[in-house]
Structures are given as C-alpha cells and as structure tokens.
Image (cartoon, rainbow, N blue to C red; front, side, top):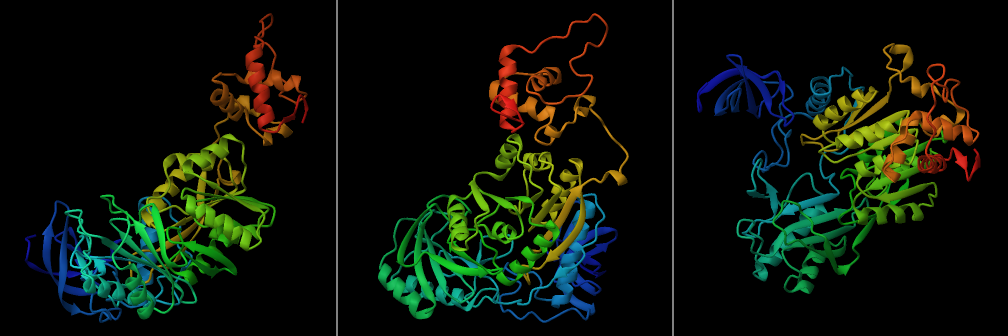
Length: 543
C-alpha cells in the first residue's frame, strides 16, 4: 500500500476506538468513518509495518446504519466516536468489542447476555472538563493531540455546563485574563470543570495555575447570570506540569462546594474530586446489574474495592450483612462516610488506602468476604490485588469495568487463581463515545466440573477451626509479624496444647525410634499469637 492512494474495501467490523476494519491485499486497514457492511473508496493516511490507517472518501455501497452526524464539531473534536452511525449499530459494536476482548485477551468464551442502551444519548454527562486553549477558548482535545477544538455547544454536556463555560470565556476576554499554555507553563486558567445533579444544580470549578483569579466577584456574577442553577464556584490550584486535571488545593469563591444527588433511592454528597458515574440513569442500571450478579441474601460480608463515594457499597448494604468499602482518595472516603450517615446505613464502614494493599492486608488478617466487588479505573487491577482478592476465597467476585481490555486481562488472572466467569453484561454509560461499561460475575471453579487436584497433605488436617485460618495462613502471619519460620508440625503441637483438634498423624514420628522435634518457646508464643489473631482461641483457653 502507498500513502495517499485510493483503494476499494469492504468494512467488516470495528476497532476498540470505533474505526472501521477492512483489508487490502491481506493487510489490516483501520478506516476513519467506516461503517460495518459498507463498501468504500478509502484514502490511505498512514502505513505501518502490519497495519494502515485510512479515511472513507466515497461510499460505494451504503449501510442502513449510516447517519449524518448531528454535531458540527464531529469528527474534529475527539469527544465522540459514533455520531456517523445509528445508536443500534453503536450498541452492537460495543457488545462485540466486549466479547472479542474476553476471547482474545482473556482466553474465555462467554457471551454478553445483554447490553443496556442509554435512555438518554445527549446531555447525559453530569461532569464536564473543558480544557482552555492559550487563546482563551474552551472546548475539547482533538483526537490524539492537545489541540483544542472550541465547542461551547457540546451535545454530550448539560446546558448548564455549556453556559458556564461560555460565561468564563467572556470573562477571560473582558478582563484580559491569560489562559494556560502547557508548552511555556505560563498563564492562569487551565480547565473549566462542572458538576450537575439531577435537579440541574451546578458547581463550577476553575482549575488555575496559581492561587487566585483577578476580579473573582465579577467572574461569579457572569457565571450566575449565564447559568442561574449555579450553587457554587470553586477554585482549584494546579501548578504541576501534568495531564492530571485537578490539583490538591480547593478554595470556595462563592456558594457551596458540594452537591447532593439521588441514585438508587439514596442521597449522595458530591465534592469536586469525588468519583461519581457521569451518567446517573445508566449508573442505576449498572449497579442493579452488579447487585443481581452478587446474589446477596442478607447474610454476606461484601468487600467493595475502589468504592469512591460509596455508591456501590451503600446500594449493596441494604441486601448484605455488612459492607467494607476501600478507596484511595481521602475526600471521597469522607464523602462516603457522610453519605452512609445521611442515608442511615449502619452496616458499612470505609477504609482509606490503596485497593491492592487493602486487599492484601484484609487477606492477612483473615477477612473472609463472601462477595468482593471491584470497580477499578481504566488501568484495571494490579496483579497483587487480584492475588490478594482471590486468596480471601470469596464465593463470588463482581467485576465492574470501564475498559474491556484490562477487564479481559484481569479475568485471565483470576482464572489462574481459580475463578471463572459465569455471566457478563454490558451497560452503555457513554453514548456516542467508544467507551462501554461491563459487569462480569466470577465464581470459584466447581468441583463437579473439574477433577484435576493438587493436594498438600499437610493441609488435610481440616478441623472446625480451619474455617478461621489454614496452616499456610498461620505460617504467613508468624513470618510477617515475628520474622519466624514455623512448620506444620510446630503449629499442630501448639494447636493440641490449646485443645484444638489436629490430624491423627501429626506429632508422630515418621519411623520407629525417631525423635519428634518440639516447638521452641519463642515460636510457640508466635503461633499462639496467630491463633488468637485468627480467633481460633480466646485468651489462653480453647475456642
């Protein structure tokens, strides 16, 4: 193939980014604007070693799914990927994307039972982040670049977000306020960030390369005039050379810095940095599906990793015995605790920290949740988080994912740890974009379906207390807390002293006349501490 040459191709599918897939002389070509089922004349834009990129220039055989884009900024603006096709075609492409990822990357054949389309395909985003160009124009990044396409009428955003951004643009012009230039690191305003609740109330946050903006009172007046639903204006200080939008410092310029929103019958408090699903209606359907997959009966302990402001935790709590939520963002944890209080939910607690570290810690401490829910960011789970979660031995793992690729990778990792996917459903949280949410139910391998076993005879000493901790877990605890290595023999000797049952062959010599080594005092003390930690004994008496 040659760059700038025209070729006639048949579009057979879509990439994860929504590009059409075709072939020219056996080589894969990704076609901007291609629709599955069409025959197109395409112009080659770039040729790589094994693939090429092209643009559809003439439709020779038109698909009934093709639509005239309804946005003047499409496709220059990188916000949308599917405005040239029907919504039904977009949903089919997303469902196929999830199945392909699980098969190719996860190594599992599991159909997507359903994809829940959005009831609202425009104006659904309750959070908006407008980057501001050095010329003071608010818009969105062109695909694969940091060039900003001005767009104050984005169809995905709420009317409140678009109006607030327009007011800030006018303020920049009126007072000659310099916008931020990421190349030089100079200028003030970096992003316009808005949150809007189900009632239209909006908090406007301005991300600033400094601690203040000139004429802040005039700025507030302009925003309130353009967007009367504004309830607060907040400044965020971000002077770092980074692509991360928000810094760590916030200052309320006027009004309130938080919003309340309702989700699944619960009320949630939203601060600017807190994670919250951008499509509230679809979030309710997503969480309903997660609860369905969790199979709660009211007796379970649920561990919710990446809990954010506690949305999934609080939804699960009404159907579980207790829920433990883990979140790394301190502000979100405070919001989660406040959300639990204001909703009167008492069987939930939150822990601030890294999800992987928390899972490993809870596993060491002997936590045995029946259900683990994970809702990680786009990069998915760290490998140690997968290992720690599986080591806790939950009956079910509900994986909520915003990226089919990392979901598939982690499903494969869970498979190596003994968990297989049983059910899969998709939810279109982000209409008109490439993104799709997926919920997968993973369960332990069932014995009636698997006959390969690898037994450690030392672990056959199964007693009623073994539901608290295995020999390997006791050994790991002693090594971590006391730096001592102990054998199964030593553990069984201490268990006998405490009145706990052990296997009939423990503490016996392997051959006649052979002396059995006795547990040294310091190791006996450490093992006793482990038995108390795992609640296998109380004080010095029997459990």
